[in-house]
Each structure stands twice: as structure tokens, then as C-alpha cells.
Length: 511
Image 1 (cartoon, helix red, strand yellow):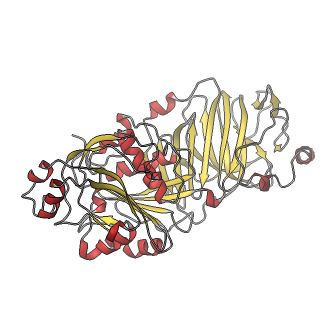
Image 2: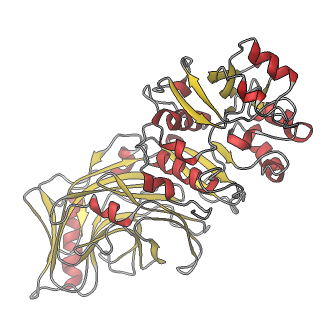
């Protein structure tokens, strides 16, 4: 009897399903998966699922319980890279939204795979769960890398304070889940707040699968879903940025490479643009490279000179740049040994910091005008104290190089540090400042042959400066542009990090 019922119900659903539905979604904007009136295009046990008041309703009762979890499955086929928006409301117990999922055994209503979790007591709300698959993928407020098994999981970053994340959740009301899956990387938002993020490093990861809605086994419950919209992403739609964060070397609040990379990566991932930003720490390289053949840009935020991570990764980076991959460097990462990486950085980046020529004082730079360049989109003139490097080495005649931030330093930035033999002062830089030559401290470049893009930004000494909206925007613009992205007219959008956001992921001990 049950098998006959399942078969009949599936045939009814299929009758309402447009042909080649998934194929028609490719390249489109968000399209609705639920018509608000019927369960056309969905398949589930009819004892538990219905449409009421413009919403899909899943309900169990004491008289009609479900034996284990059961699911309402979208019949549009398996989806790989996508964005899914769905509003949910829960009365009692636990539920979730399945994605990149699979059918368990012969029962089409039993599903395993990734799940955007939520519960009435909010214990699980916002977490990423592996239903019949590796169990907890990322708890609320965490970013993880998941390996081959459920026990192979690394928490790589904090996304925010748990109480602040939960404050965005409306109890006993409608909330919206926004799920983004690109390559090996998945993000979950509730009401616009990033709640969980994970990537799978396994070659056997879930790269595509079904979308389904969960009705949890156990006590009686009711869950409602509405406004279900899907946007299928093509591989070329997205830009992938790899951050290589260096080791700590300074006192707390300075050279926060780990925390700074995660803050910038999160800002890009939250921007709403088609971009994936992932972070590898301690100067490492992701092995194996899972999810795509190569990134669109590599960002190095690390110590430089004799300790520069590019020395170890030079061969890999060279292969990428030859293929047109962009390179960006922040702060100390712009400094290299001229005889070892000088010409290489002119090739990759268009410029670099050279000892006995360039200087690195702390000073308040005033950027009074900005060029007509995408990296400057939406950036207003601003002033800020940082360790701005200047008097840099650039390609001859600035070929392919566009200054983005330029300012005239105060002469005392040189006279105060004249005793430093490597980076304090020298006759050439003294003459340039005395003659009133504006000094370039951030730039964008295009390689004349490969057309690969480069971005150098010499600020970033003080971690607190990421709270400055224009300071942060010019860097986010530069990184997205370096990856080949089209920077919006108002720049890459991002929220101002809170004081708590700044503390997240700082590895240096706090005073």
C-alpha cells in the first residue's frame, strides 16, 4: 500500500514539473521553486505535507507521527553551484533545508547530505549539519574545513559572537535562510547574517545534489516554508580568491595576518557579489587544491623581505601568473629582497618595497583625490594613520601601473628615522619629498602580455584600520578587481566591522 501511494504521489508531482526545468534555470536570476498554491514540482509523503496560506506546511501529530526524518524533495534535479533563498517558520522541535543531497536507499523521501539546520530552541539554528553524512559540518558562528570523515574537521575561524548572531533570528516568526554553494565552499546566512561556513577538502566531497525540506522525527511539530527562490551559478559567474595569511610577528593589534585575512575574506563573501574567498594560514598552500583548477587571484598578507612566503611558493605562483591569475600583496608582503624577488614582483605586481631605497614610517596620509579606476570606485578622500610605505620600485615608465592612493609625506617621516640604514631614509627619497613629489602607497597593474592583474597596498599595519570604511573599501575593490571582477560603481559593499569583529581570530595574545 505504501509503495502504491508513493508511486501515485510521484506521478502527480511529475505531471506538474516543467521539462528540463534545471536546464532552464542556468544563467537566470533568482526563480521561484514554489508557486504558493500547490506542491507542483515537489515530492513527499502526502500524510505530512500540504499547502496552506501561501506556504508549504510539514506537520506531524501524536496520531500521525513519522518514523524517522522525512523530506519533501524538489524534483528539478541535482544542483551544483547555486544560491537558495527560503523563508521558514518553526513550531516545536527541529527542521532543516537540504542541499547537495542524495536519496537514501529505495525510499525517495529519505535524504542525506548538507543541511542548513534550525530548531525551536535555537540550539541548532544556523549550523551546517551533514544528514547521514559527516554529521556536524560547522557549528553556528564557525568556519571549518571538513576532510574525509566526520572526525576530520578543523575550525579555522570565528564568524562572530554567538549571541549577536542569534539576535538576528526572530523567534516564533518568519526568518530567511540564504544558502550559497560554490565549488567546495558553502555559506549559510539567516536574515543577512553569516551563521556558518565550511569547505570540503576531500576529493569525494558533495559537488552537487538535491534540494529538500526536512520534517524531523520525534515529537509533534510543524514547519512552514515560503518564498523559495533558486539561482543557478555557472562556473564563470564566480571569482575565487585565495588568501595566504602569514605567521604572527608583532605585538597584538599589528600585523594581524590571520585575523585580517579572515576579516577581508568574510567581507567579500558577505558582499553579495559572485566571489569565493578562502584563507590558508601560517604561510601554507592548500594541498590538494580541491574545488577548482586554480583561483582567480592570490592574496599574500605576511611578513616580507627575507621571510617572504613567496620564496617558498614562487614556482606555484609563477605557473598561476603565467595563466593570468592575479596577485595582490598587503603591507609587509610588498617588501622583497631585490636580488631574489625584485624582478618577479615587478612582473606579478608592478612594484615592490626595496630596502635602501623605500621607507616605512608611521604617518598620517591624506588622500585628497582618487583616480578614475575601478579600484577607486565608491572610495571617498580620507586620511588615516598607518605605516605607509613609500618611494617604491615600479616598472620602467610605470608601464601598466595606475597609482590608486598617493600622498605627500611630511619631511619628519624621514628625519625622525634617518638612523635606520635599511628603511629609514636615503638621499633619493629625501630629495623626492623635499621637491613635493606625491608618493604612491597603493597601486593597480595589468601585465602587458598575460593581462594578469596585480594590486599592492602598503597600509595594513594597524588591525583597527579595517574599521575605516574607505580604507577597507579600496582594498576589497582591489582584491576583487585583481581576480578579474567588475567592481560595482559604488565599490564592493561591506558592513563596518564591530570592535568584536576585530578581535575575532587574532592569534596574538591579548594584553
